[in-house]
Length: 179
Image (cartoon, rainbow, N blue to C red; front, side, top):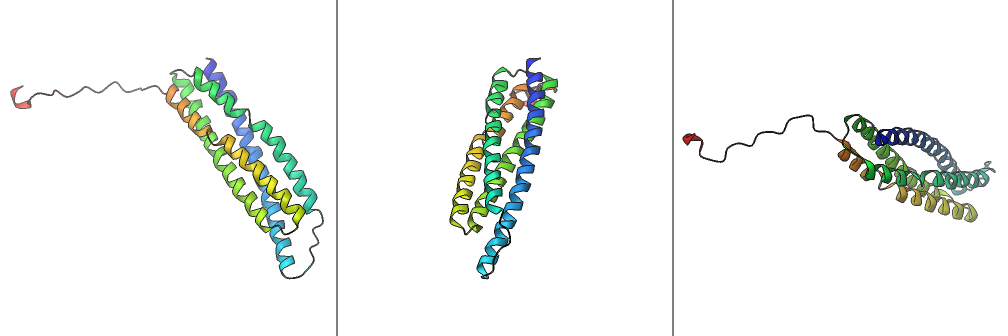
């Protein structure tokens, strides 16, 4: 029963974390679009009217650091569930959901990292470029923390899986014509 409760809690935690990560991804898309717009204006020798970009980048980096502390506990809990997992048909359903959500989380983290690198490449101002570089490093650290989650979740699925089918009979090894 302990495994089921842990898996239910982990499913809820991963669902909320994925939702937060999608929100963070949308904010980074906005920052990337603004960085591209500012870079295009600088390339064309025009001034950009976006004076708040640096502040928004700093605020976003603070959000990433706060989120990083939230996400750092998830692999530990997944490991604890893996160690206590036993074969249970009811737990297998939750384990599959946890695996699906952990894969989604890992993929979204990788996409967030790619986007942060792209934003860093578009920024021209030195102080903002440094801020974006640190942001990309912090997102990369989150990716590294979340990289093993799908593997651990897969091990949980394997540990909780129950074979419903009866074992197949092995065919006789002798000559069939003599039987």
